[in-house]
Amino acid sequence: MTRRPLRFAVSYLMARHVHVADALKPPLTGVVFDMDGTLTVPNLDFKEMYRRCNVAMSEDILSAVKAMPAAERVEAERVIEEMEEEGRRTLQLMPGTRSCAMWLKRHAIPTALVTRNTRLTVEHLHEELWRDLPRLEPASSRDDDLPPKPAPAALRSIAVSEMSP
Image 1 (cartoon, rainbow, N blue to C red):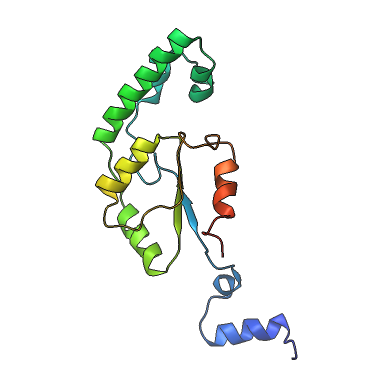
Image 2 (image 1 turned 45 degrees about the horizontal axis):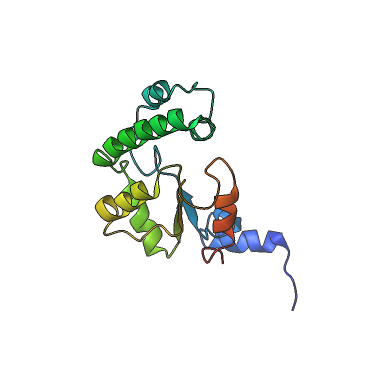
């Protein structure tokens, strides 16, 4: 088998009106989404959540709450759950999310989710807003065995899952 020089390949693509840069890109094999501000409209007042939990905005709220003494931790967890319950009630998809998900489905591109939201919120997304769209699988939440974002474990897990080619 003779190898043709790249110059030939570029000429061949140009003759067929294929954009060379697009033709040389690796194929899209999957997409991993976040929820707040990506798939869904941000609807949690994080400043208020941090204030009510007595956590500095410069800290990771999940880590800070986990490190609190038991009584303070229970109260902070109650505040977070109360605010997240309201967030689930008012959850909406970002404009363009539905058409993007349908495009990915038409092109058989798998989708996954990594979020710091709870498993309950992920299920609410799937059941109420994502019903007719291809399920985001795997869907990693902060309730899973993996450390929450920004730790890379969930993304690594997805990269080696059935989502990979």
